[in-house]
Image 1: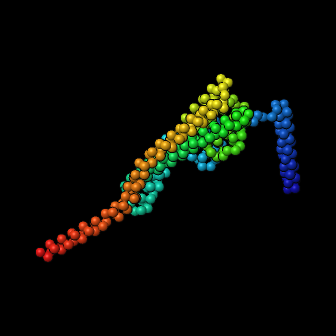
Image 2 (image 1 turned 180 degrees about the horizontal axis):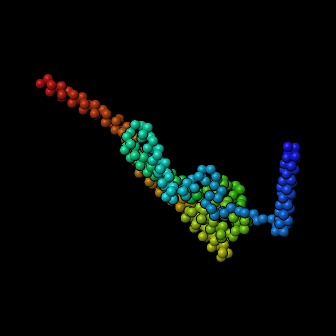
Length: 285
């Protein structure tokens, strides 16, 4: 028995020593290969990816939008809504046939509501970019007039800006792309691709043309900033002109009934009293 334990202990020690030697050999081999081949190249994330740098709800809604563009996503969101509707109908005591109809309607409404939510977030993002774009271009042009180049002016604007804003977020991605060695024209195309807004595409096209032809980038920024300011003012005027029409329906269901009650109630009371007296007279006859 003692011999068996001793042999097992020796076997364990030998295996442990062999593992340690192999680990040392692997470490020495890696060091030699590292010295011969040099350090590995640093891997960078793809800046053109739509979810690059997104966090929290922005990351969730971006992938949700991509998922709903597939037939699996549509079926899944409709199945989830239908399941909730079916369970709620059965819990309320409805028969199975009515519960099935409720499930179909709930699935369809869930899909429509999800699309409406995503469309609303996309439109809100586009409006924020359009509203802030002329300010950013004007600030860039003012910094460049102070004697700085486009890259340094962009870095200065980004240091003072709120990077959670969608416009400055994409500008920061463009600035990072230029720091990694991407050409300015390609970085501007990346900005237009990520923003996916017509006004940004127009600005980037003009900047690329000025950069290639050697024109003044500051003048291009000033020109587009003034044009976008005029467009924003025109859009505000159009909304102000449509405001009375939009206020008509809330007034129709809120203010008009109260005015009708205040204005017509005395007349209705008088008419009611007259009719009551007429009916009493006819009953006496």
